[in-house]
Length: 266
Picture 1 (cartoon, rainbow, N blue to C red):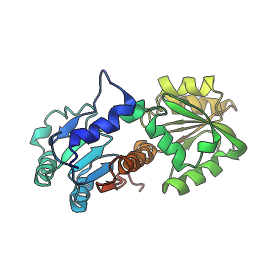
Picture 2 (cartoon, rainbow, N blue to C red):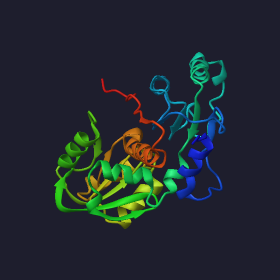
Picture 3 (spheres, rainbow, N blue to C red):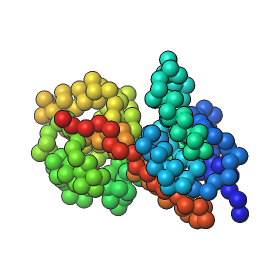
């Protein structure tokens, strides 16, 4: 049976319900296109799109935007950039349809992107509860920030992590926030209200939550903070989306294509 892009969208977004305001939409191609291969990724970078074409996919499902702006309205003057034009040319020559799948997975219960990170860390048995924008974990035995960081690096295949606080601090009550939910307005109340020993976050302004954590450490208090980076915190959730698509459409090849890490350490 033939499957259109819209068929895939309908199945993916059904658990989220109707969203009044969303960035989720077809940003290139057509919702009427017949699907013969799906590529799922955190960010549809140029190299990811090349690999999608090589894999034979004509539908790319991406969590983040393709033109360097959350709302996909681009950056002023972007049309004059050869980088922008080459990406458009690749999309068109590859006959790709690209669907932005950002808000819907965050509306799943629990949040698919958060749950994906929890699963990748093998911490589902220790979940205390899921909040709409975070997960709370209670480890049966306390571990140091250093021990937890080494475990995270191994499980997520990360070369490095950043942290704030007490490297030797013992942690058992942990909060997990993905993406850009490490900002002060969200993360600081979470630390306070849930009496966290450790906050694991994607990213956020460095002068907000890290400053609070630094002040707490200077006073001899908890919590500490580990910063994964935005992509590292959300890629496991998009791998879950690929797994779901394989279950929903077993007749269609589904490829999870992780982006090449962009930010390196000198």
